[in-house]
Image (cartoon, rainbow, N blue to C red):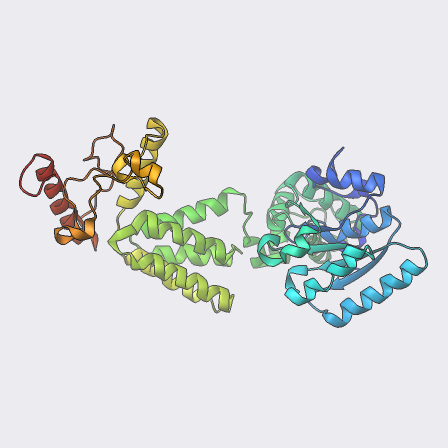
Length: 428
């Protein structure tokens, strides 16, 4: 039996982590202590105890548990579970139907549970690594409480590692080895124990200590995986971002591959590329944002490793694209104004007038419809609140890429605005 299975908690007190759910007076702790069980969804990353909590819940409530894997099961397994629950109900026994990876069931399969949950035939517990809001039917969600499980913390993982060492009668670990294994586990207790079992097998009974060098021999490239909350991960994404901003496609591609090789989620990298497209390129090349979104869509369709190439294409494109932070600077400047100046009233000529009362109060009066003006531009019209300077500027295009043309156009429009406000021909 794998070490992770041998060390699976047999009681609530043996469970590590999840203080927000299992601490004193917390939701699941209360359910365990009172035996008052309701249907639930356990949402969290792999290896944080979803299956264990389902088993302990059944044990604490004296219920029979029927386990279904949505990866392997389908309608047949659902029907069999319902029939088994009916048999136990006839015998006066409670039952829990536990569905692992429930997000893999389609809508009709998820709907198959609803009438039986409604009738109280069984209590439903689903486990998922995906956001239930997006992956589960609203009807099922409305009948179940969602409990969010967090990655296991470093201190708890270190304690679990010591349990595993004692169970295998393995040599002691150096502090560096403990730190590396905990970082490699990345909050996943199962991954930690599986990795340590491999290391202990390589170490054998003759080893005096398990150190970093032995870890490298046993796990090799696997140790390059990132701790998602650690400095290496964030330093690497920072290096990727700065390489793109610095227009160095080769360095950008290097850091991209470093992150992939280290186990970073390609979707996370893709989300950061979306940010770069707006923050560092913006309107100098508006195609950059669309290309990154297309690359993300291609990745979702293909997955790894095929979809990784689409993201690499986006990385290179962003690096060689003309750079502009004008949109970013304008965004921050406007944000500061709003935070400092508060909520100024909308000028009357910009307000909508859907009712006679609003019209009588002057809403919409003196508004000039831009499409009726020369070049579809109403020169001199003020669009800011009355107490602000109508010539306030946040967006300052840079002389690169498409923003060269945007800058020329804005300069012309601003000159026409200024002339109109001075009362020259074309003014208000």
